[in-house]
Image: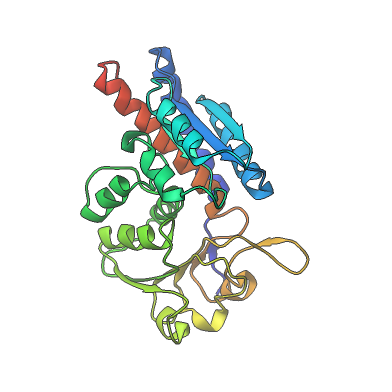
Length: 288
């Protein structure tokens, strides 16, 4: 058996076409969706991520503002910029690219973003809404994973899902989304003994720890769905995930590749969150 590939590029293209159409309708009414991205410092990976996000906005009819600041920017100055963007009616989503320099309190910055502009879904209000099943912005990466499961028509009710990783950005929200879909969820992490014992029982595995070769073929139940959120480099410098793709694809029923899997979906969900923030703002003003 060879696993079916869940093509994140193809799914993203479908979803982004819808974003373009909806953004055009809002723009015709004089209400163009706007995203502000703040980059502090000169981390090369962050610069690439930011460039891709801004380009995606431009390609799909969203207004984007990119602010680049030196690594020496003070926390107070960054807070002031966030507050100014909170008050800007042309900006519907605010994204502060992580990681921030060590002298800046990341959580304090995140909490300064107005919840209705928290398109990354990292604010405690967004986390609380997810936990309690209320409307709110879901973090983009796990939300993209859910869209990938939806795209293959996978019924999560009654299934056993294992999430490897417990970060606030992916692991924890991923587990909550799977719970909302009526899966039985196990969260594994660095202190979990005998990881394979859990993964061999899983119908769905989401691997999100950033460790190359973590999930091997003998750790996977035949026919399961494997979603690889990891982003690493192999010995040749080639991009790869947390999953031994060539081995696991011979056992799993479905698998996501790296690159071309979860990555494009993350930016797509950011566009969708920004669009929905703009639609909510327009509705509040009676324009949509």
